[in-house]
Image (cartoon, rainbow, N blue to C red; front, side):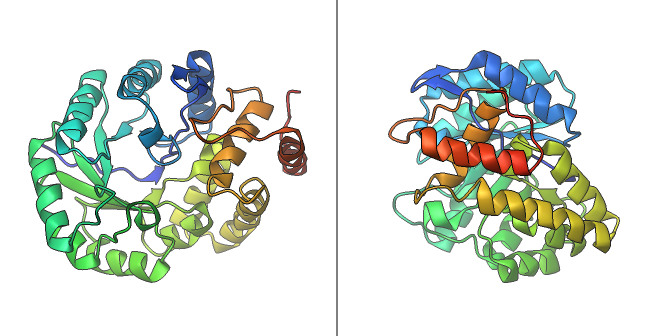
Amino acid sequence: MQPLKLRGIIPPMITPLKGNDELDREGAIRLTEHILAGGVHALFLLGTTGEAQSLTYELRYEFVELVCRQVAGRVPILVGVTDTSLDESVRMAAHAAKCGAAGVVAAAPYYFAPSQQELVEYYTALADALPLPLYLYNMPSHVKVFLEPATVKTLADHPNIVGLKDSSANMNYFQTLIYHLGERDDFSLYVGPEELTGESVLLGADGGVNGGANIFPELYVAMYDAAASHDVARVRELQRRIMRISTTIYTVGKYGSSYLKGVKCALSLLGICDDYLSYPYRRFRAEERARIREALEVLGADCKE
């Protein structure tokens, strides 16, 4: 199987919902077209931003099929298969492959934190069983374990493990990965936190998996282009806009889910899709919604209501 070398902005797409087990299908189609119009390089479904672990398997399958059909090969699609069951991960990957996805993404199994040796064995078994290339997903805040650099180096030698997304926000860790793996043409390194994308790409990362690209895809594509061409003045200019988004839309309320609530609320105000969140999380109410509207207006966005 040939590795899939992707560079650029890969938005972790939200999952538009109308109810706890009801997909906002029309909103998902509008959101897909909105993101693609921004010039992104790929899409990532069913990640943290996609609320994957809160969704029924049936809805996850429906969403993957819908988006793959809508994209129709215009950009590659990666599908999250993170699960506590290896068999369920493989089953989701088989569905993704059937729908036309280009690769899958998996964080470590959560609940009991595995050791590094158990992670090597787990990911090796998973990669051996998958019909698509596998991207590792370092998400220590949610799964309670780091994919340590030595572990990643070992796994990178597996022919079906082709990259890693890092959402740790630990630049020392990420730069260690770039130092060891950044020159390989068969392994990609992406940064999750958008506040670090410009810096990371300047220093050798292959791109960003940035949630804000659901709202402003062209901004993050511009940041990638500027950083990839080493236009530092342009990177600094775009960084101020990205930080304005980060410090307004993502910081309303004292919720662990404030970032996701903010993204979904913003998309609702822009008339793109519903802002329903999977249970037990709730959408922003009137006062919080007004703060997101104000932030969007400062950013120059055209709210619809």
